[in-house]
Length: 111
Length: 117
Image 1: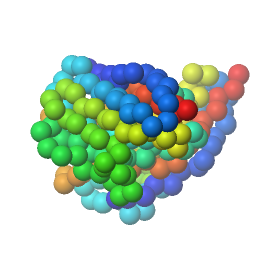
Image 2 (image 1 turned 135 degrees about the vertical axis):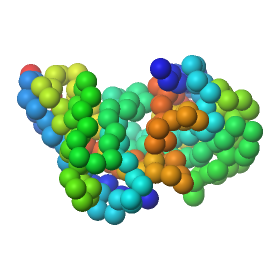
Image 3 (image 1 turned 30 degrees about the vertical axis):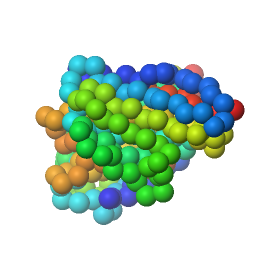
Image 4 (image 1 turned 180 degrees about the vertical axis):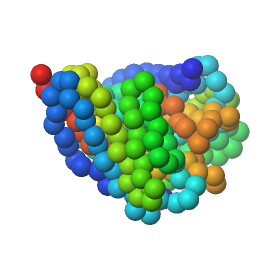
């Protein structure tokens, strides 16, 4: 399973754009990149998933370079409620379905 | 939608007793369900994968006789912590996978906080 590396924590202020980068140097050809958000004492919540280039949904964008060895989750104009732990996971390709959670990035949004 | 529920949301028990946690997929049938454990300020750790009608597959280091998993139907999986001890106190989270899911997406339950006294 591909290992991921993310910053342990990040700080931001309300209204700013936050970019969290994840490294996954040994990502496999079939692997997808998925980001989850977790609030304290809650289960993770799916944010976005992509395979290559750029994916955008109503809450975030995901940028994936051509070599796919990293990815960047972009949260536009964060609010206090975006304070959470963000996990980057790779996998989900054909053949297996387990997810391996890394340490995640604790994002703290301040007023 | 894809909603997964867990019951109870929190439970406190005495050391030596057994506790059962239920995980239900409310609006879809889940061929595969997963059980995770999360200690304070740590990441989720996969405990086991359960497929409906078959024995669960446990991750290395997880005692299958202590953490009994039953996936008797396509919408229900249960985790029983037998002879619980204080070190079993943790946040237990389940997830479910739809048979038609794209890229093996998992839908997570809200978690169960277990405290063993």
